[in-house]
Length: 339
Image (tube, rainbow, N blue to C red; front, side, top):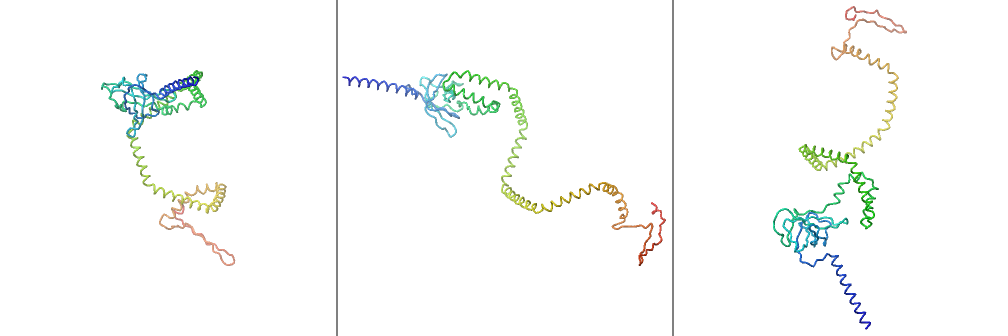
């Protein structure tokens, strides 16, 4: 009798445990036991979407994601199951949205413009009627110039507060909001800087737009230059080798010429000192050069020879015995000699 009672209790416990396990499994897997219709949604990017994610209409769950696969090499095909009691029109638009801060997504279906009847089972919603989820990486990269103005300590503290909130410590919400307010206030204080950046960027874009022909010509010429350099890369490489050899030869030449050059520089310093010490004499010599050159030009003005005109002549003749005899001085009375 006791054995039978224990067996009955064990059987009841096993049935209840199996029932609750089944309910838990159904809840976790989002399994539906109602009639559904499959549709195919074409997205340009379905990153983060997983089988079992919810499909909602006006925030109400009406289905789930069945599978995701590559479509035509560059697109993503998301197959969903929607309650048969909620037929979709052909104008239905689909958008991937964030379900929570953990990155989970869901498919939001909305009524599009136009009339076209109901979408048949296994029908396709084209990419023109779908919109991928917001790329948070691109969003944060866009805010990178602004975030650089914030101290790393503030960013770390803000990240810590967010983590605490995600871990269930709701008491840090006030601190999180305070840091967000501080962040927005900092950005607000820099609105003039941001405005000037936007204005300058607008001027740059306007200038580029007004000179689109010059910019196009510049790009074309730059492409031609790069193509020319690419075509002459062998010659450029050979010239670099030759330049290397020239540098080596020049280095050897300078090594040999360095001692004589050093001596020349030393002597040049001595010459400079001598010239500086006799500066007055040099000035007088340079001052008399024009007059002397004029007289020299007059002497050689008749041809490639010197023409002399004697105005006076006297001579001194040396005789043996260290005796010198002076001749009478001959003087020419011509008017030319009186100049």
